[in-house]
Image (spheres, rainbow, N blue to C red):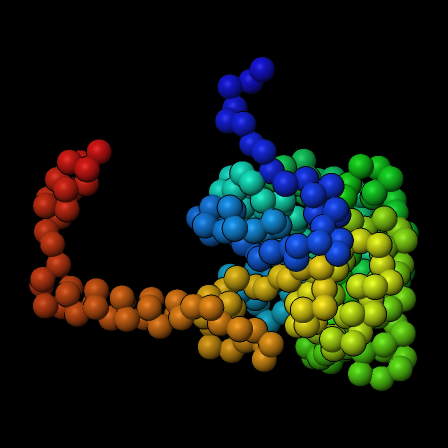
Length: 275
Ligand code: KIV
């Protein structure tokens, strides 16, 4: 028995078993401190490729690399010990073939220790999902608004607003479900469609901008904490962290300029006494 601290995370069975049960609580995290704050409150933490926009200032998720996902995945695994952790596969790492998907997903799992990967799953990706699941990699699908397809779609737009789009989103969800996805993120669709898909597929659906008619919900944590000025309309802000940070920094700057900042030796002594 190793001396490693015992870690008892939620498992893929816990997540898949939540179909039609208590809604799954899911949020994104990209670093260890945030993961440790979310850990005991979330069933699932997603290391989303939204990290590219939220942390790295990219205009979309298209520029996100395997190395970025692995680095942030490692940090989130270090900061958590209860939640089920899923790492997004970045654009270009799985679309070419089932083999490409397996090679990159297995690298993500080996190098981060995460429990599953997520891919943005057009109907073509059913082959990738089946191939990975058969070889031991739990896969989460992602249908509806697929941010990695922003350049084809011409922007971040809600999906399912006409019959052909509606049928396409249903086909994507069915394909991911039949190929063995343990859960499916549904992004940016109306309640009616989310409800229809949730009734059609056997695995839990996790909504983002897709109403409460899903088996769980996910949000980008920075959006719901109020860290940014602009968020999609559907996001409810549960905090105002940006305002708090700005006023703390203003207070600090005023202290420094007024020379009322505590001296170095005093700060050092206090820290030492605390230990
Ligand atoms: O990258 C991400 O954060 C996501 C969620 C928005 C579902 O895919």
